Structures are given as C-alpha cells and as structure tokens.
Length: 304
Image (cartoon, rainbow, N blue to C red; front, top):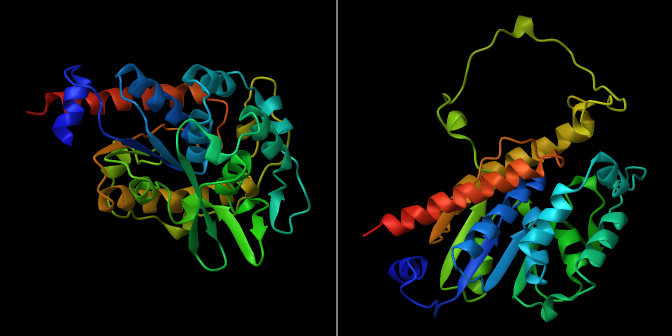
C-alpha cells in the first residue's frame, strides 16, 4: 500500500484505494487540520473517509459536508475576539461554564443543517461517556450535534446527555481516532496529531529541580483585554484556561502514545506553538499543518 500511495503522489497511478483521515483533538491547535487538508488536496490525494475528535470533528465534519479548504480557512481567519466571545453563552456552572447552544447553532448553519449520513464523504465523530469511560462513535444524525458532542471539553462546556450517559470531548480517551477510521474501511490511514510536543520539549530531561522556598501563591486576573492585547492574554491564565490546559496536556500525552501504537500509514505530528485556547492565531496553525504535511509527503516520495 505504501508503494501505491507513492505512485499516486508521483502522478504515476490513479488512486484505486481508500484513504482515511484521522483528525485529532486540540482546540485552537486544530486549525492546523485546514492546512493538512490543503496540502493533501494539492498533492492530488483524495480523502475517502474521515473520523474526527473534538476540533478534528469540527473541521473534518465541515470538509465532509462539502466545505472547501478556502471556506474553512475563511471562517478561521476572519474572526476577531468579539466573534469568539459572541459564540460563548456562559451559564451558572453546574456542569460547565459555557452552555454551548450558540456554538451548535453556528455549526448547524455552517454545515447547512446536514446529517452525517447525507455527507459527501463518510464521516464519524467520537465522544466519551465521562461516567463510565466508554467511547461512542457518532456516525448518523445531525452533524452539528455530533461535532458539538465531540468537542464538549469537560468543565468548560455543558456536556450532552442521552439517558444516563454524559457525553464529553472524544479526545479524553481517543484524541486521534485512528481505529475508527480503520473500522470505516480505510486502506491507507493518515493520522494528524495537532497536540504533538515540540522538538525542544522532547529534548528536555525527564524532570528538573526547583527550590520550594521560591514558590509563591498566585491569583487569576479577571479583566477585559487592552486595545492592543488579545482576549486570551487577559487572565494569564485564569481558572477556565488552567482547566482547559490541564485537559489538553492529558490529551497530548495520550495522543503521543496512540499514534504510535495504532500504527497508521502516515503520522503528521503538528506542533503549533500555540495555546489551546488561542483562537485568534489560526493562520499560524494552518501554516504549520500545511508545511508539516508537505514534509511528510516529501519523505514518502523519497522512499525507494
């Protein structure tokens, strides 16, 4: 299969096999998926099935619904912090700080109210029952609802429920849904991990020493950002951002092991250098995803 994929890249053969894309979780880091899709399209690779987790479900669902790379990029790049805040509907935190209904309405409009079974490309999203740790694959029904369930970061968003199941972000136990793509019949699997650690981070020692006498208590800073300051810098970080980053770190550790153990044909590890809640630097994430994909495709071409 590797040789057949290489022949397609070299323009020497038609793609007569199924390529599956596993798009991973990562909140704002997941904008890198747009760059990945762009690079694969330009390389002449046809994506036949997609599975996504969290932001991977949001981007992958849009692509499966027929949205072009340019359309997805336009949404990501033309949003300011007022647009971001307008999608948030804070509630008294019984199960989450944000209700999520505004995000659902936005996605449903973006996806043209489509159901998963009606998409141009077969698609699935993952979600987790937080009470039992069971993984569920959403492969039918309202696409926006599936993306909303898959990206329901615990504590941040109100989870969706069915009977006694409380469904949260699929990235909690399946941040890069490789096995889901495999179950959908993919012959060649491309896994995209946008939670990859940077090379500098990988070179760090297992632990470092610190003097406990130098530690100080800290407080969150609650204020509106200044005119020349992005909204996500105002807290530096606040309680919600700390909760978010804690979850993202856990997902990143799981993803690092998952992409190796699940044995996809190609692993695209993208280290964006962005905070997971930095939704205003989409261009950086998109470019990182594009360049890392081009690099991996070139490595395939160079194989004998």
